[in-house]
Amino acid sequence: MIEKLKKEAIELLKDLIKTESFSKQEHNTAEILNTFLVERGIKTIRLKNNVWAYNKHFDAAKPTILLNSHHDTVKPNPGYTVDPFEPTVKDGKLFGLGSNDAGGCLVSLIATFIYFHDKENLKYNFCIAATAEEEISGTDGLELVYPELGPIDFAIVGEPTLMDIAVAEKGLMVLDCVARGKSGHAAREEGENAIYKAIKDIQWITNYKFEKVSPHLGPMKMSVTIINAGYQHNVVPETCTFTIDVRITEMYKNEEVLKIIEENIESAVTPRSVRLRPSFIDNEHPLVKAAIKFEASTYGSPTTSDQALVPVPSVKMGPGHSGRSHTANEFIWIIEIEEGIEKYIKILSELV
Image (cartoon, rainbow, N blue to C red; front, side, top):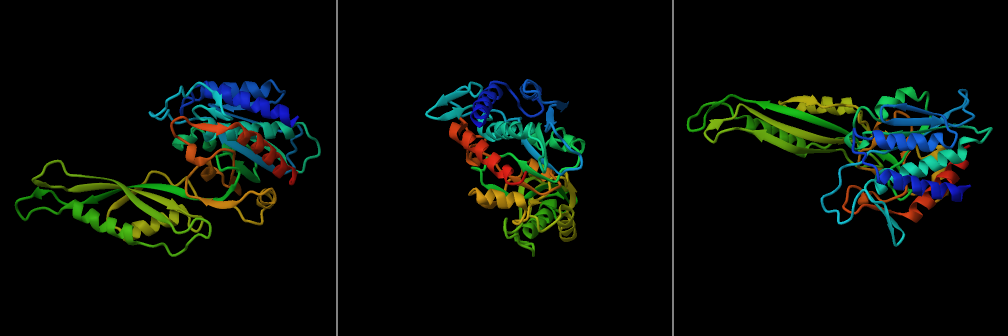
């Protein structure tokens, strides 16, 4: 059965590669995924471009494991020398947009779900969710459907990690800041330069060290990534806007970090959102222990994924290498998918 699942997963991935699925435009790949599951006797639920399903013998009295990955992609890198929508296998590699991020993970999780779907007397239920808008941290993907899934006890979020497990992941806050001064003529002692006010705040951001340091992710990180001020060389600017990219570890809540920043800079601070939270799972969790048993290494991930939207213990884990994501001529090794399916099944079999 597992060999059949491997072949079907690879063919499904080829179909996904052939089909444009840029964020917010995933309707066609959602239909492909829905059809794939229905043809195998699986009852599906679809909301916008998200598709999910439960194991055949679902029991509401039992805990539930969520298997999640996304089917949206970024637009092709301009450096492509092959057709990004033509799935091509060469020297054991499957080339194509979304093959590595995160098509290989998604089809491997789907194959794993199908393996367990018909089994009786499991200790856990399974929910598979193929979701949209991950690449843009959109609100019509996992965030939209998570409340519809019912109680979830823990989750595997499929992202390319070489089948190692991210036991912690940094959250993200983007803060828009405005330093306010007073306009005046640059040649005279007039006005109050908003740029200088912003510089003072930016220096604090540069130098501040958060007290608590994560054992998995290290120290918190803040970076000023955009700044704008002025419109004419001889006019003192009355406003200066700048943007802070804040990467948050599991040692802090997003709201705590926002409060610390607001209390220490003069500029007005407006968060774009506080919804992308840091993730953490205890090393003693049965899922982590099972993964380690099958030679998965643990690490802390500095990048943000849909794991930030999962409010229960979770790991980020999947076939493929994160360094290939969003690159020209993106690919995944066929053997990575095959071994990924085997490893997912082995790990989950330890639990159920």
